[in-house]
Image (cartoon, rainbow, N blue to C red; front, side, top):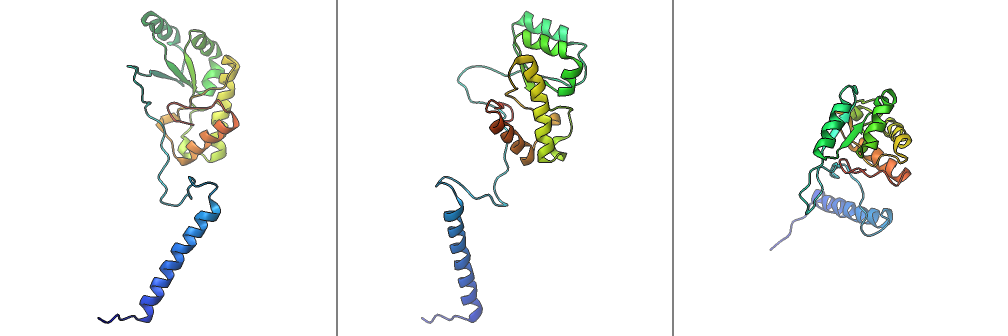
Length: 184
């Protein structure tokens, strides 16, 4: 049996081997610990949390507060009558216009979640603008509850890697920012 090599095949094998070797070296020098990874264009997209595993038979009910407060008293009355607690995801400018209603919701024992400051399409915002949206609303919630919100739900159900990284930045800035609906 004869092996036939030509110049092009030899060069292709050498280039492939060098590429693999360089990638191994990059992994060795640029990862902080054995479990770290190097992000590449094929790294999987980050996803929010849609559900939490539990042995208990529970469901999370949520209400968005973004437009008006005309029906808050009726909603709170119904929830109290049924002995149900929910999470109200509040838009920051809604809180500013309806602070009394937001306080009433909190005093009734419901959780206040962050739904951005003024309900923009967050997928169209850059990193800094997303942080600003989350932080401004969280500060308003903190004025009512004494604590920043631990939950964030993007307006229109939108999220992308920039939005999720912004949430993680807020979490590291404020260690209590952990979102059960979109994990920060």
